[in-house]
Length: 171
Image 1 (cartoon, rainbow, N blue to C red):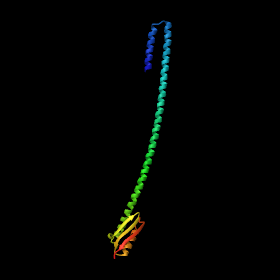
Image 2 (cartoon, one colour):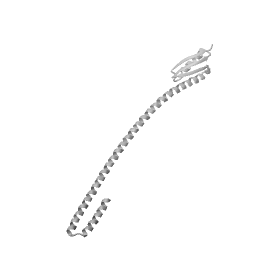
Image 3 (cartoon, rainbow, N blue to C red):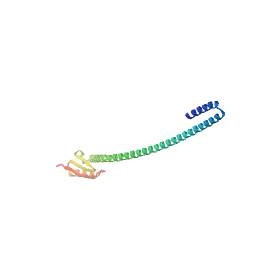
């Protein structure tokens, strides 16, 4: 825009100057004016070229920044996935430990229920404790046969690894 204003001013000045000069002076002034306009046009083209080059460099820099941003986001995503995987593994391990406890409680409940169902046994007199699938029976019953039956019932329950029969026979 400034270049155009300068050109207009230069043309106006040249016209005014030419009107007051002789033929030789007018031709010399016209030549100088043409040279000045050519120089101005060349300068404007240089500015345009430099502006275009700067725009291209800016576009390249923006593209590089975009690539770096994408790479950083990809790295962050991978780290997040890894952390989530580790958290899942920790959760599964903790759930497994809780599952072991629940399994022992479930085994104890199944053994107690089976003892209650056996009409020959007074299940209220037998304690059942389960640790890692190993069942311990304790309490007092009327006969050795009842103690043996309680042991057989416990051994038949799914998940029981072993049975320790600490039931005492009442005399």
